[in-house]
Length: 147
Image 1 (cartoon, rainbow, N blue to C red):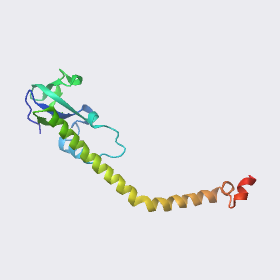
Image 2 (cartoon, rainbow, N blue to C red; image 1 turned 90 degrees about the vertical axis):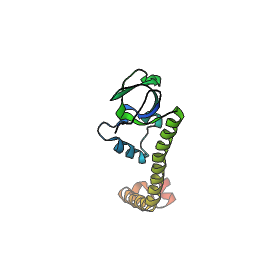
Image 3 (spheres, rainbow, N blue to C red; image 1 turned 30 degrees about the horizontal axis):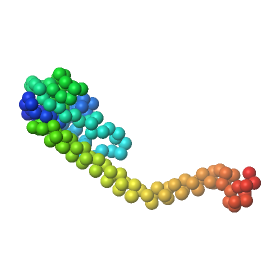
Image 4 (cartoon, one colour; image 1 turned 30 degrees about the vertical axis):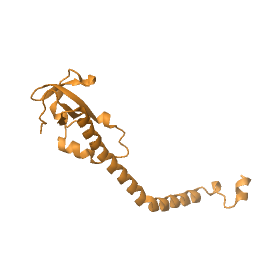
């Protein structure tokens, strides 16, 4: 689906590497439902807001931002069109916040659920290491001084 845009409007769009080239826009947007804790990209790296100067059937030319000024940009990268820059930025912030919030909640719950299991596994592994290398783990404080 191509978003209907007109000259003078502001658009919220995806930067090239995040665009819907292999996947559909629907799939790309669903991917923002959770921002994994290892994802290091910022909202500015994923999305850009541009003022539309000229619209063609498959592309548009932005007047702003300077990074893209005068370039033809594929309309498939456009998420939504707005009257104001502020409205586009607000949607960008909301969309990005949804994924961050979900990702943080998932990570927190993951660590909460794994805490007991991790402690048991860590203790078992430490016992194995102590049995494997007993000379590094004295049983009394005096033995540690004798080395």
